[in-house]
Image 1: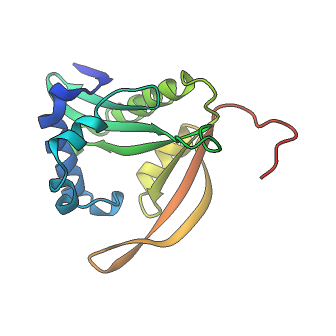
Image 2: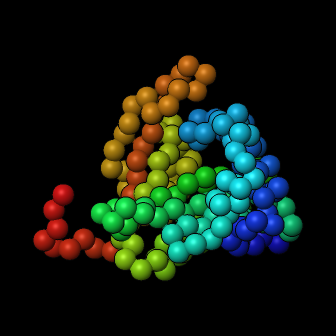
Length: 176
């Protein structure tokens, strides 16, 4: 049975194992590397899993096994607090093609809508990851920029597509 819930300190071992697996198996999907992740202390990882008013890490479970992740991080600076980012989005290959990615994204966006004053949710996706881009577009995300050579994976430049999902209409008089 598939369930989605916020992760907490009791989930550190499963979270760390799935996160390392994601970084190993999908190196072009994440800016972090397995080497970077292994250096993180238990305290840092626990802070990632601590649900607060400005962050949550959702986990998708197949029975008792963690098979998917989706983090939501709200900006903290006063001029940017209207925005949040989806981070660490991943579904294990054996759990794909069952609608789990869509369900995780729906739950993440529902959490975003519940944050007072939040207007938009941003994310970055490898421009070559067609399946992820199609999922995000089907959920209302729109591309707003492409960063060429965002990161290097084994010496190969990887482009990142920036996308936004608008939760609330902009004020008519607002300007950048």
